[in-house]
Amino acid sequence: MATSDEQAHEDRQDIKDEQLAHKDDEQAEKEYADFEARVRRTIYIDHLSPLVTAQVIKASLAQCANVVSTEFIQNYTIQYEIPAAALVEVDNVSQAQAAVDLMNNFPFMLGGMPRPVRAVFAKPDMFPDRPRKPGLKVEFSWVKQGDPGYDGMNKLKGLARRQEAENMALIKNQLEEEKELAAQQQETLEASNSKYDMLEKLITDGDITKLAQHYKVKLGDD
Image (cartoon, rainbow, N blue to C red):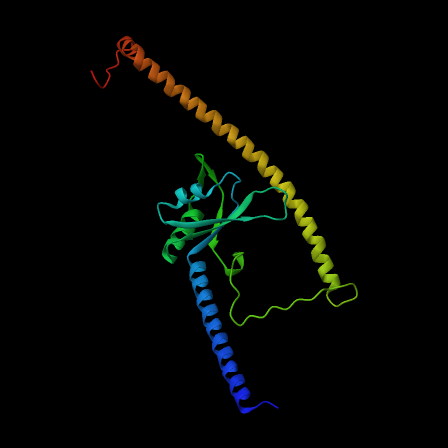
C-alpha cells in the first residue's frame, strides 16, 4: 500500500504527464494549422513533361505569383525517374488562384512550344510530409485468404499491376514524343542561329551596303 508521500508523488507525476500531453496536443494542432495554411497556397500541376524543372515552373508563373518552393511527385509505379506532377507553393491564396487560372487558360510553354498541363488547388493527401491530423487514429490489419474483403483487395492488386503496365506504355510513348520535340526545337534553334550568323557576316563584311545599293533599298543609317 502506497504511503501518503508516495501517493502525493504519483499525483504530481500524473499532473505533469497530463500537462505534457496537453502541450503536445497544442503543438500538434499548431503544426497542422500551419500545414493547412501551406496547403491553401499550394497548387498541384500534372501532365508535366520530363524536361520541366523547378526553374521552368518558376519562370512560367512569374507574371502572377512568386514561387516559394516546388516539389516534384515521383511516379513510383514505373521504373523511370520522371516527374509526372508537382506541388508548387506560392506566397498566398490569391497568387495560387491566379496561377491556377493562368495554367488552365493559357498554354504552358516549354522551349517555345506549348505543352498541355492541368493545375488545381492542392489537397492535404497530396503531401508526402503531411503531419498527423490531431485526434486522427489509424488502424490497419493484415488480410489473408478467407478473410472478409480478401477478394476485393486481390482485385485491387490486379488492377494496380494492370495500371503499372499501362503507365509504362504511356511513359515510353511520352519519352519518344519528347525526343522528337527536342530534335525539332534544336533544328529550329540551329536554323535561327545560322540566319543571325549570316546577317552578322553581311554587316561585318559590308556586303549589306552593296546589296542595298543594288536593290535600291535605303538603310536606316543612311
